[in-house]
Length: 257
Image (cartoon, rainbow, N blue to C red; front, side, top):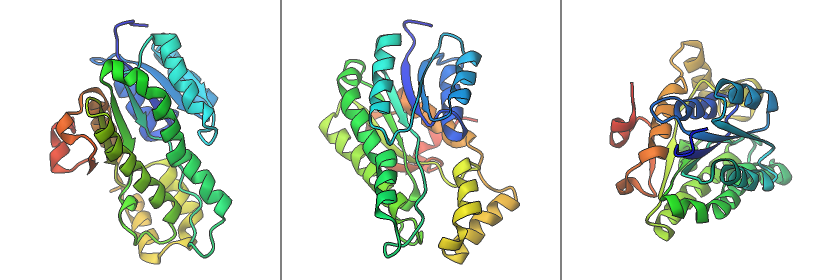
C-alpha cells in the first residue's frame, strides 16, 4: 500500500468496464489504491492478488444498501481517505413495457442502479469534501431517449443518475461530478440483452445490437474506461454536473490512446 496514493471506490469491478477502469487506476502512473465492489468474490480476489496491497474488496449485492456504505468504511479504514468513486454497477432487467412489468423487479433495479449510489454518496460526502474528490456515474443514452422499447426501468434509473450528478454539482461545487455514457460495449450486459431480452424489444433495436456484435464493430471497454479513469482523477470543474458520451468532442482530451 502506498499511503499517499489516491483512493477510489469502483463498483462492478469484477469484470468488463468496471474491472478495466479499476486496473487503469491501479497501474502506473496513478498507482491508486482501490476498494473494488462486486458480487463475485473470486474475481475480486484475483484483482487483489494481481495488485498486492493496493486493493481492498467488498463482496456484496448493491441492492443491499449497506454494501456501498461498507465500501466507504473500507476505504477509510484501510487507506485513510477517499478521493473518488466510479459508480459503474448496474442491471438491465426487467426489460418490459409499463403495462407488463413486475413492479418488484422494477424496484430492485432502482435499488441497484440508483438508490445504492444515493446512499453511498451520502456516506462518502464527508470524506470526499476533505480531498475535493471526483465522482463518475456511468449512464446511458437510454436516460433521455424513450425509443428504447422495454427499457423503462433501466432508462428511468439512468435519468435519475444524471439528475443526481447535476444536483450534487450544485450542492457541492468544490467537488466534481459527471455522468458518462460509455456507448454500446462488448460487455456481459450486452450479452444478456442479446440472449435473453431481444423478444421484448423492438426488432430494429435488437437487430442493431446483434449486428454490431457479429460484425465486430461493437466497442471494447478500453475507450470508455480510459475516459472514466481519467475523469475520476482530474475531471475539470467546467464539466461539473454534465452528461456526455465518452467519445464526444468535449471529452476528447481524456480519450487516451
